[in-house]
Length: 151
Image (cartoon, rainbow, N blue to C red):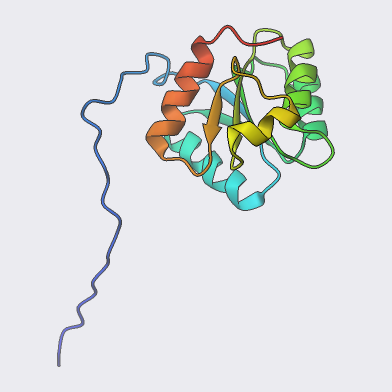
């Protein structure tokens, strides 16, 4: 009887030896993730969860506003898509920050930054272009947490 061999090919785990230490990354921080594309929402939620973030998900701006109104604890950061139906991410951020002025905002989009200007994106806002690598996501989260925000 021949033995069955199973070959499993997994992607290599890239180790970033020069990656910056993110001091708050080891503690649980709460991120409100707003994304209308289910697959993107799932992937980003999993990446954040694997990096010890507590994730609250919203599928659109109105759901995110309801969460901002009703969630009893601190939301440290909102990570939102810019281009979404009904309410874009910029309008969402303005409304959400009126409710939670200490919350930081990180925008993400698959569109080029120049085309996002029509949606209200400015140079002061922190943008994570899609697609992105895990390292880029973590670095942009750190940048957004340190940014003065926008009004």
